[in-house]
Amino acid sequence: MKTRWYIPLLAACIVCGVIFGVLQGRELGRKEAIRQMAQTSAASACEEFAEYQRKGHDSNYWYGVAEFRAFQMAYHMLVEDTNKAPNFTFCNEVYGSLVLEPEKSRKHMEEIVAVMEILAADVEDDTGYARMDELRHRLSK
Image (cartoon, rainbow, N blue to C red; front, side):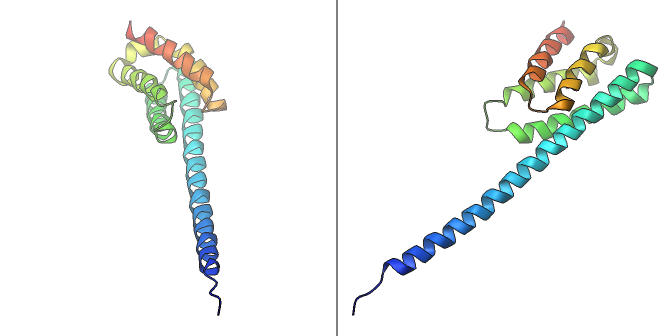
């Protein structure tokens, strides 16, 4: 009697493929949820900073800073272990200026709003992070 050793092997490969597909789908769903969270927080930060620019209420500034932090942390999770991870450093330094030197940061509100408008439209836009780097340099002077 001839044994069919390849049938269990084939079944095991199919099961492994299905499991891999399910896990890959979950990872893609997780990444999309994180990207959406970063996108939403960037848009909220943009709105709050724009409102601060129009009305000058401190609460809008601080809500904008809080939303910026939420955006920054979601973006960090989105790009960790990628070649875009250095963008998080730019965001972190801008966040530090927003929190530690609010009076100085408020003088650059037009630029902050402009950067956040770019990222509110597309949280992965490289132009936005190039502008974030420029903003970081202006805030550090």
